[in-house]
Length: 199
Image (cartoon, rainbow, N blue to C red; front, side, top):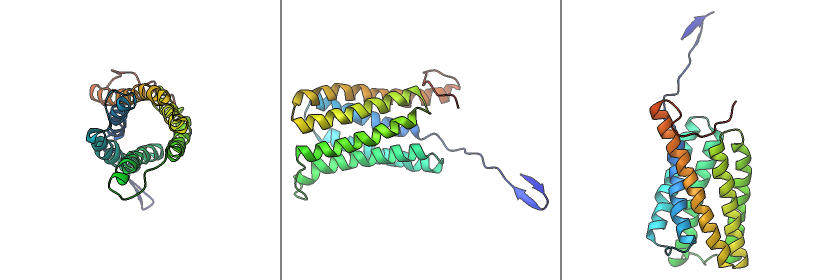
């Protein structure tokens, strides 16, 4: 704290933890499990829905709020949006089964997924100033959304199956980016490279 001309200024050091690993893990782990389903290995079940509500959904929203506290507009927008994506996706599956709404048509789901792909494409541009690891996550996620949209639009199961494999890669890339940040911080050095961009 400095005093001068009767003006007192103070600097506050941010001592809060990095919320990005939480958000990336919530996204990555849920994405892997959903896309193992999309690839045809097991049916949609409460396991995926529960992950979508709590870890992919609520977990990412919490991470987004924490990013807001750190004045990170990109992190706030990304984690809050994708957390709400998971919650809306679960609602699209569960609401018709509960008799609360009519099930979305394949064309409607295609439009839904396309809009998320468009959003992710623009967010990918933002990652060009962050790190190679996040560039891969967002680029592969953009491709995933567009593949899933194409699968629903055309009704071609092969496209959705292929999207499942691509989505597994996308999810694991987010898990890598999360755990790299955790380990790098703990060890105080680059244990796993993230390819951070120079500022």
